[in-house]
Every structure is written in C-alpha cells, then in structure tokens.
Image (cartoon, rainbow, N blue to C red):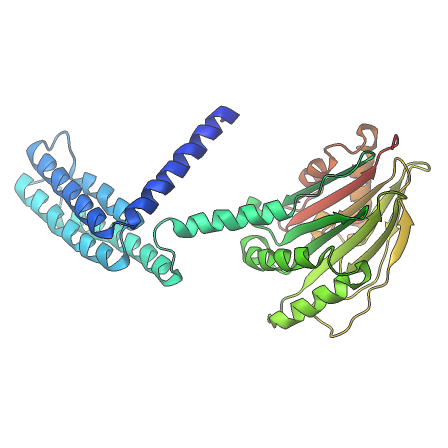
Length: 364
C-alpha cells in the first residue's frame, strides 16, 4: 500500500510530466526535431553496440511523439522511424526477421496515430484530454460536498460508481441559506462513465437552482431544464429535502426516486417518507407531493439511490428493509462514518450507489 507521502510524490511527478508535455506541445517543431534526434541516437547506438542497445529502443521516441506531436507531424515521424528501424536492422544484419520487426514498429505507430487522430478531432491533443477528464471528475466530486453545518448537526455523503470507475450517474448537490439545509440526490439514467457526462451537466444546473428558487419550485424548475435538453430516452430521478436547522422541521419531495427513510431515536423505529412524483423529464408540468416531518435530537434522515436497495433479484421494498437493518447497526456509533460503510455493505456492484445521512445530534 502506498502511504500518504508516497501518494504525494506520485502526484507531484504526475503534475511535472503533464507540465513538461504541455510545454513541449507549444514547441511542435522543436519537439519534432528533438525526437528525431533521439531516434537517430538510438539507431547509431543500436548499430554500434547491439548487445547493449536493442533496436526496440526506437519505440520510446515513437510513444513520446504520440504525447507531444500534432497529428500530421506524428504521421511523418512514424514513417521516418520505420526507415530508421530498417537502417538499423540492415546495418546490424540482425538474426530477427526484418519484416516482422518492422510490422511490430508499424503496428505501434498505427496505434499511436489512431489515438492522436481521435484527440485531434476533439481538439485536445496530447494528454490534455486526460487532464480534462480528471478536472471534470474533480468538479463533480467537489459539487457533491455538503456545506458545514452548525453545532448539533452532522451530514455525510458517499457515492460509489458501478464498476468502481470515478464517474457516476449519481450525484449530490446541496446548499445552506437562512438556517435551511437543502440537499438533492440525483440519479441520472445510465451507469458509470456513460452517465457521467450528463451527471456533470445536471449537477451544475441543479446546483445553480438549489438555494436560488424557492424550495417548492426546485423540482418543477429542474424538470423544465431537463425537458429543454431534448435528450432521447434520458431521464433523472431526484429526492430533495429541505431541513430547518433551528427546529428540525423538514420537507421531502421525490421525482421517481426511492423514498427517504427516517430513524426515530425515541422509539427506535424506522419510517419511510413517501412522496409521490414522476420522473424528471417525462411530463410537461408534473406535481410533486411533499412529505413533512421533524428531526428531533438523535433522529436521522437517509436519502439514497436505487442502487442501494434494488437488484434484479430484489425489489425496492425488501431492499429498503435491508438498508434500514444495516443502518440499525450504526446507531450505537451515532451514524458517524455510516455513509461510507453503508455504500460498501449495501451498494449494488452493477449499479451506481449513493447515500446521504443527515443526523441531528442528541446534545444539540
């Protein structure tokens, strides 16, 4: 296992490599001739010292070219590399089949060129495409962070993507204003990376709506926005809650989403907070029925996605009971760290899973 210090070194090295590649990309002609010179050096060294410098070393500048050269330059450089490789084999009278070696070099060049062509069409040559994906992932993660709450309250969120990828169709947006905490847990159609781009778009839009429009208007406004996108066969489910942090009064609304569940510390029972509402994006002017309640000291409210409770072999009702049973074991620890534990224990491996826990502490 890599310790925190090792991870920091790896991150620094990664940032340094990205910076060097970006710098090289600004100097296309210089990078081209530098790589060409490197190939010539490898060729001469391989011809002079065949036992120490293999001809396969020519693959190194070819791979570097895929990172720093433009598409047309890379095509030219690949052809030049093939000619240099032919020269090396002829001068060394290598026992390996010349045709087979050149075919391998050509195949590697074709793979590098194909990747560069795709990045060139996207307008993000080099490693910029990967950097953009990492930035988008970090943006989605940052938008899911809950705001700091006043004394007497604690909230946690955990999200697990299908297939353990870093992109998820489940996301959380939240805000706090005038002692009111608003949280929306959204599940976009699709799984993992396929739903990640739509999740990123909607997280920015829904995050902008949250706290700006009145609580009652959030889901209708989100529905209007989703319908304007005119996505074919795409929809989203949402559970939205507004909690008054001074009194504990809350209101839950859902749009085709599994209901919230509340833990009553006084009775030790779990209560489902049903709130009927259609999927977002399917109807022009849907209505979303509210469900009102109160979080007393010690109570907790759970918002979760269907990946936590539904599988092909288990319906939502049984899954909700199973989730409540798993959460029951966290009561003694005050649900601290419970979001991550529940996602790991109850989250389905074939679907995105997310959960939010809002807990009013007993000594508030």
